[in-house]
Image 1 (cartoon, rainbow, N blue to C red):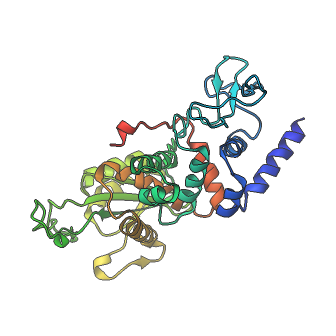
Image 2 (image 1 turned 180 degrees about the horizontal axis):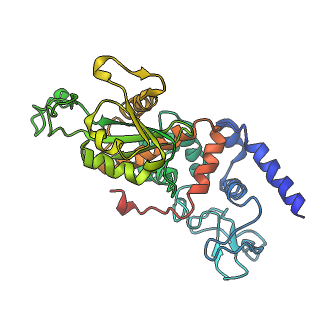
Image 3 (image 1 turned 60 degrees about the horizontal axis):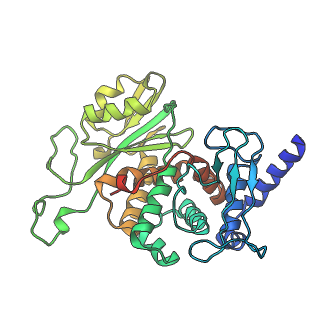
Length: 349
């Protein structure tokens, strides 16, 4: 029995390895097929109760039928395509959507599956307005869906980065000089960081972002920070990196001087002198990441507020970290990580 189960699991993974969007749309033709598809991803060895965690074989609740032997219609007159199970241990009912980002949503399950796949494979991201037009959803519903998927992309990794770490910061936001209306920041110029000198404009409304990447694994972690002072940068680095066992590569910014002493080795390149690579020391990997991040925000989303910047960073961190995975593998990972990540609309506004 165990060998048959493992063979079935391998068959499912093989069928999903090279899945493209047309093949996915052909396979997931309705909500019932979408339920089966998600069950294959989340429960390859059988249903798992989200309430008690029991792996004991749960009972599938066959939909009720009317006196004519037909499946009962829902309130709207459509036939329900839900697949509901009942746990034999805690006796509670559940489905593959229970306790995930899909829980409680009135959007079609098929739509959820297709949008998750598109966000997993789209290098530049997918705007809420695009989801709205493609699937005929209300603007707020499409916007909330995208944020729930970004919440699933957020990786709550307990382990700190260790090894050779590259750190660099960038600024997210529009150029105040391009604003044509009268406002508080009209006379401000973009942030310019000059080595060994105070910042020209300490009151810019751009949001600083610190990113850390492990050169060995390719894992990147980005955090929006208040400023780029030594105190703010060290606070984030100390949370994400095991400093006494790692090596730090940065640019010539003096903000890293003090925290660099807590690493095994701290080396930097002097960008102001035209030095970008010296042996193994370089920040070019993060420069490439920032380039993709800014192009995508400018071209796809156009504007990202400070309140939601963290989720957008998590989205781009996810795709960059797992860029060597196939599109289907990234989608499977999002579905796996969606467990226990319900997001209320009130927390997104």
